Image (cartoon, rainbow, N blue to C red):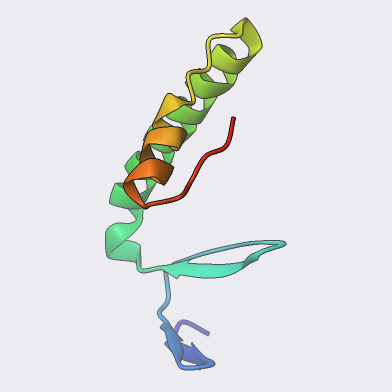
Length: 77
């Protein structure tokens, strides 16, 4: 207890944040938790805004077609 451990090569120190879901597990070193929290909150706000746009029928997905064209993907209408 209160000592670093290693799981499959990943070192986890006391105080690190461990988060898991059906897709896997991630370890965030304690010194980075505030920055990660800010980034995830910003992402969450952006996703909520996007969901609201979808509900209102204002979801512009033209950027998807533009990105695919830039990558050379042929789009058939």
